[in-house]
Length: 131
Image 1 (cartoon, rainbow, N blue to C red):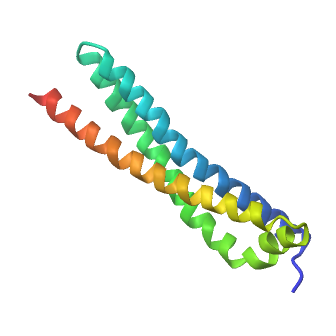
Image 2 (image 1 turned 135 degrees about the vertical axis):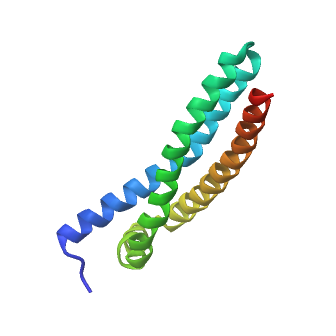
Image 3 (image 1 turned 180 degrees about the vertical axis):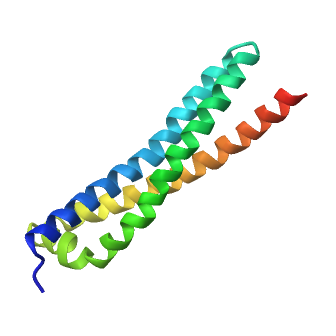
């Protein structure tokens, strides 16, 4: 079954934004970890407050990225063999496609792991701030 040009464009854009969301989830954890490290080296209550405010803003950002990974993954999975796989196989790029998906899975796992670690740091800072 052929894919219409309009549907092809929508699938291509969905796949692009899905890849971007994957990168954003992982990179947001790395960036927030860097902010935490800077905060850890600073003195005074303002440093912890800065991290906690940044953390709260970035949580929304990361949740949106994770939501897009899940939601955007649905059409990507549905059209995978007809769009992404067929295109790569026709150009001899299957190994590159496999490597890309391995990297994407790694980035999602690293992003989720990083955010879980950062949550524990935020909880610890919140508790320390209260005492």
